[in-house]
Length: 237
Image (tube, rainbow, N blue to C red):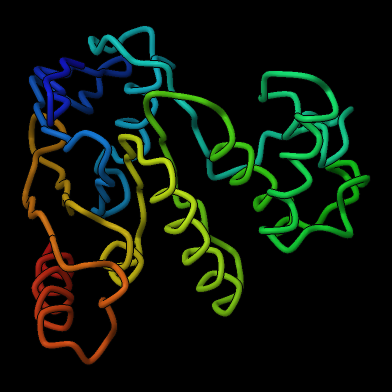
């Protein structure tokens, strides 16, 4: 991934699994210290793109930056409490690390769960711990694969607002995969749609969205027009 002052470039990405080509000479620009949301049908390469950026695919051709990855499954360390699953990714004195982790759990509405182990957490609780860990880990690149999937709608809305607040306090280049058009519109600086072509994924759509996040709401003409545009494209795939 090539970096310039305001943009990171994925250039000529190639990923294949045995005889299946997922990406062939695929290129995409990511605005630096901004959030790029990626949508597309199942099988279009969204998760594979994140894994390539994280350096998790030995057969990909993208050099990668130091990445923090929030997966669809929580991947918590089973022998550590919720609190220590966060503290372990931080630097500094133990007391300071645990204090930061405790504050993050409170923001994730998990204050009463800090001493619980992953097997004692519900799926939604474990995912919130995983989101918190991904946000806390110091990295150049934040990768998020449907991070709010499986959470109830009210909690999703609260956590999206918290994510935006936290991210704006410390921006970093972020690639955020989602199936939710509204979620993308609420958080993105740039929206990308991938399609499935004969030679792997292709870039069907990309658009920067500069409306202030605090102003984005259903009923706003610009938001509704963008939502309709993306919806019409996705259902045609």
